[in-house]
Length: 99
Image 1: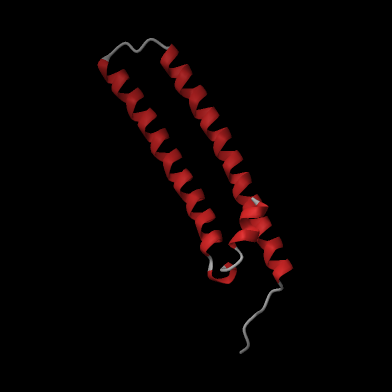
Image 2 (image 1 turned 180 degrees about the horizontal axis):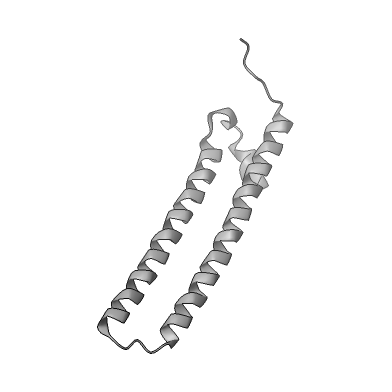
């Protein structure tokens, strides 16, 4: 079987589409951060009557922070994959110029 070949122009279009997809995911992550921040503000405005309420609140904040870090790492991995992908080696300058 022969290797599938893509023109340089098509490769750059593909890179643009992948980067645009990552950009949309980053926008979604920003909305997620905003909604979670609002949730934390609402909870913190309530009077936490017991030490257990405070502990539960801290666990929620921790869970939100862990999830957001995981999502950020995932997006960073996707960008690194694009920049180091075997089919795009030697074209880093083109990719960086697009970004």
